[in-house]
Length: 188
Image (cartoon, rainbow, N blue to C red):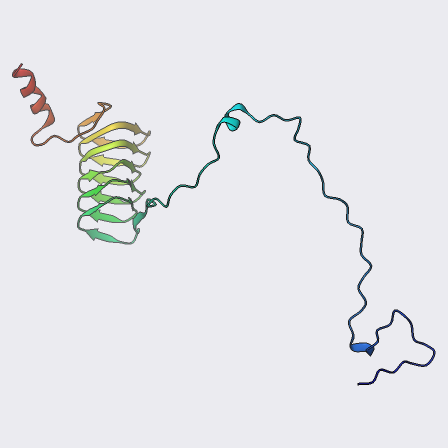
């Protein structure tokens, strides 16, 4: 391929290959130097200096939540280690090592064993063992309750026997807990 110069009008800055060549590079702009922070006057807090750098946690099994949607009605039994959220209707016992949440408008007919029980809907059954029970303003509980701690919001409704704040909550093996306590006192 031959390169021809145009007569008398060639410039040093013009491209050698005609109009298909890319334009010459723009002159380099002077960039300001990066900002420098002065951290010498600040001293780190005593706790931060003594605390080791956080180490990433091993891949622990994440607590998963199972949901019964608002438009579902299910009958059966729930057992497991994760959290359960009921937004629909469930008839049966719930025994989970995680948390149980009963949404506003939801209904559970059955016994409950869970780490924490948060009720905004309706529960018709006993809460046999929980470290924390929270009855929110729209909650309706019809049944007995045994928990380490109980929070009752204004507007909630309760009908049943309540035992809370007695440390480790363990369900009675059989019979009524009051009858068992009375038998223990009489044997002394």
